Image (cartoon, rainbow, N blue to C red; front, side, top):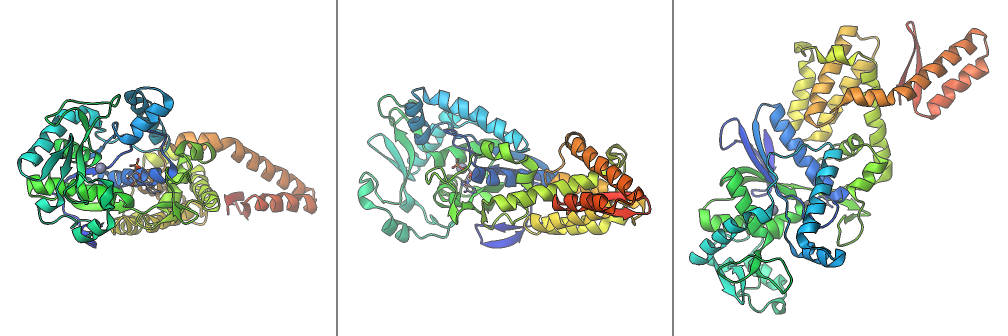
Length: 458
Ligand code: AMP
Ligand code: ZN
């Protein structure tokens, strides 16, 4: 298994720290609003990483935190005129609702930052006691000059950061590149007592403390969107390195942006579509296909045309599955005759999660299922493997249900085929051709075979 490590900027052979186990952490949402479809790309990708590792036999401990205390939550609380904790609660439920609707599994742990305040204070105190952090007017900052190696993850140099930082922004910092570990509370803001007065922890500390508690340091994989590489992940790693003399994680993975008109989709630019809005129009498997048909590190554009194509592609898989008895297929054990497909699929996935190539294998399988010149037993075997491999990417979570809901339109196609046959029998070719052509216009292709008329989607 090769994974591109943002730390070394190379594809590397993945070696788990503990044999047979993967300990992974992906930064979760800051719960001050509903999440957008760009966030969904990152969340869904790590769902696939988790599923695929499980598929190839690993025991996966997957942690995704919930940042439930943050400036943005406080600002939203003021806007909604409620307590910050109410805002967090509301959007944690919304997050889990939308996550489930997207077919994303519940992570092994979903720690909330506010449940770890004591541990965070202890951690910050240790940094201060060891000379890596200092207090100024109730705030605590990490000192980037206190240890060598700041910038090693993101490849940035402290000098460049100083030049880039606006010095006037915060005169309390010893170095403009220093970052906040603890923030003094203003009147009316949520607060916790600490050796530096009442305040709250900073985001970069939250993730280190929660990941260490649930996974230990170092753990195998740390992930997030590309925007988190700097400063968030750099700052997380700096704290871990300072105190534990170890990288926080061995492999760092970053997902490319979902863009809109070439610009990163983001709340602050107000150029976003909420995941829940998108799910009103498109099925979650369409969204999954759309994301996975591109490599996770490449940017993708939010594009209605590609989504419509993804919808057709998923419908194609279900057409194939509707042509076999799914119960019977589920009971089959995939035999060696299918190993070529399985090997190809695994080779793609184990080459830095090349889901686009892996999906091409699913297409080949679905073609075999639909090919009536192939032996029936082989068609069933191909369907069985399609379910198995597709399942490792999170597709086909409930195919029986899906096929049932698509049954009425299938029944209509069958009815039209019957009408066409009746017209043909009466030699009323203009009508039989009309049915064939109109269906073709809808993307449904009829094929006259010795066993009768079959149909497929274009
Ligand atoms: P946030 O709630 O802003 O911290 O974002 C949650 C996750 O979504 C983080 O891993 C971000 O890196 C990721 N993310 C944010 N915007 C995008 C985007 N446009 N495309 C892909 N991932 C994103
Ligand atoms: Zn984080």
